Image (tube, rainbow, N blue to C red):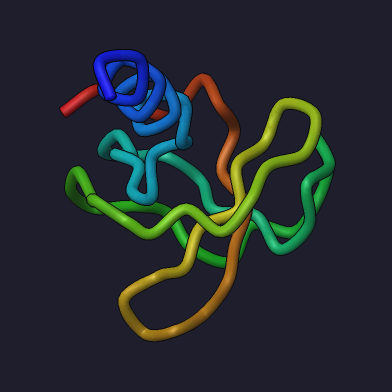
Length: 78
């Protein structure tokens, strides 16, 4: 039983975050490519659901249920 508590804690801490913080003025892309179409630019700092990741991009679900990609450099800590 004493071994299960630290193992459970380590497993809990290894789960990736379900939400990410997006900086103000960040571009949200349609596809995770550098010259991809930008369909929205954030007006304020957002906390959004993380849906996945690829290369230098994080896939997020917007408040209006649209899916977009944000560069990892545009993420902030909250």
